[in-house]
Image (cartoon, rainbow, N blue to C red; front, top):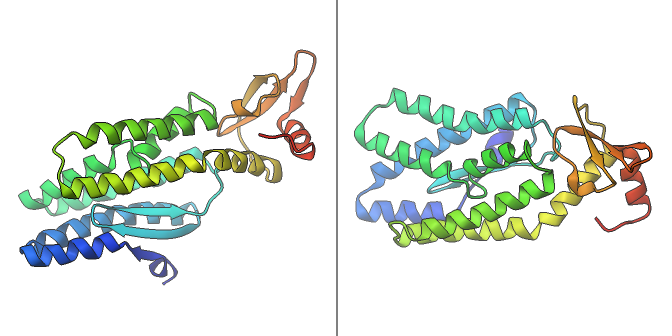
Amino acid sequence: MKIISKIKIHIFFYLVAFLAVLTGLFKDFIILSSIIIIHELGHVLGALYFKWKIDKIIILPFGGLTVFNEKINRSMKEEFIILVLGPIFQIIYALTLNSEIFNNYHYAILLFNLLPIHPLDGSKLFNLFINKLFPFKLSHLFTIILSFIVIWITFFYRINLLSILILLFLFINVVKELKIHQYLFNRFLLERYFYHFNFKKNKIIKGNDLHKMYRDYKHLFYDGEKYRSEREILRKTFDNKVKL
């Protein structure tokens, strides 16, 4: 019951449902909605297994969005499993209901959701991958930039009224993500300062630049003379109120 209370139906969903009734496409709308629900169920069950806190589950006419209230420094492995369970559940569901009309919607939702545009699954998968190569703050910025690029490219591909509404929704969300870019980085550092994370991998950073910190790594900072722990650098930074 707690999970059901977190489900929020977006106003676009009601609008599309109304248009589906008027145009005689309500059966198609039901099929599309069932695919979206099964997809989000995969994310939700994965989150419950790893005990991630779910803030809300937003149901849109073109997909769903499960919003978590979790630490940024949670395991990337757990995040990856939660992410891929959505498409996996959707694919399993498609195999049980093999029909032409169903498959058309299934592939459309699957491919759309894998676009690297925030907050779609494709963007989150890209962000996880790039976090393996670059520091957290730079990876987040790359993800935002790629989102803007893909939105721009997609805008010129078979555009119609529905596509414009979807792209507008995504664009607004990417802009919001850009606005909290610095906030997320500060939160990333504060979590490292206040909580103990048992990271197994270590990384050495030359100098004291916190912008070079990675997800899933414990850091040692080397200033040319001695090594300093991550916690020591963070304590010095926050205690002296240095601007991050």
